[in-house]
Length: 118
Image (tube, rainbow, N blue to C red; front, side, top):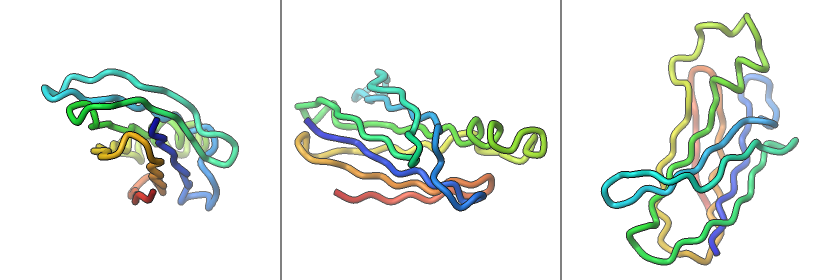
């Protein structure tokens, strides 16, 4: 089985984004989606989930990081109206069903950055 993992960092507070909600969908060739997992990051801002896929047509996944929800919870009323991009959405095509895909993300109200590694 493949593994999707992430370390989500909070650029505002300079810490891990513990508790951020992350959703993963598998996308079919006709762009229909099927939920694979929904989790909250641990106290270190990390998620690690195993996923099962075998054929090339089912290897497109979409990760959704609910950044607006996260910052509303952390910053409260002082944050209202500051986020115009409510989620960070990353679409991945995973070529190998047997390795770990690590997708670190840095989130902020005005910018987001991600990269990947095996």
